Length: 188
Image (cartoon, rainbow, N blue to C red; front, top):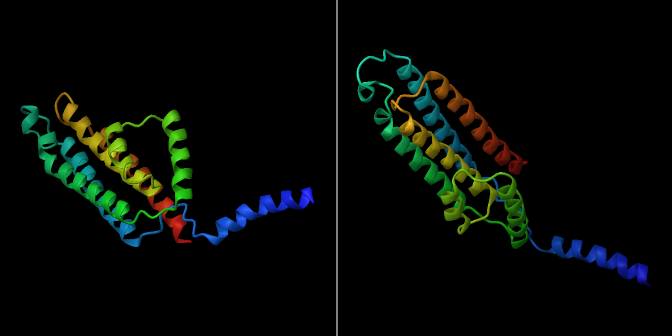
């Protein structure tokens, strides 16, 4: 009898989970994926322009150079707005069950202990809205873009070298690939 009760105790939680609609991750969103591609294209165009302009003649004061941060300010603002829109789309479609939220919360705790955030303020701001991994991926993308602008502003001349732009391109590729890969898994 004890063995039967033990078996039932092990099996019943599984059946109770199967009876409820348990959503552990946010569902696949084709529009979000397409918009991610558009942000990638816009950011790569800026990087390519940065490579070209930073390779040009470096005569005159830094502020007058084609690769100066002031010449990229509107592009940084556009990328920031696009990243905000991606976060809003992800938040609007954030539908995970309480079980999914609990699991994600534990994963977040583990990650934050081992890999501190470089955008603590953003993490805190969006933690209130959702603990969706999808939302967090887009917050990380926004953080990357914000750090690009900060790095450009803090450069002693305000002009980045071509190697820095190339590294940005690789980093953007890897970040976008990770997001799109995570989304494609949901599609299956």
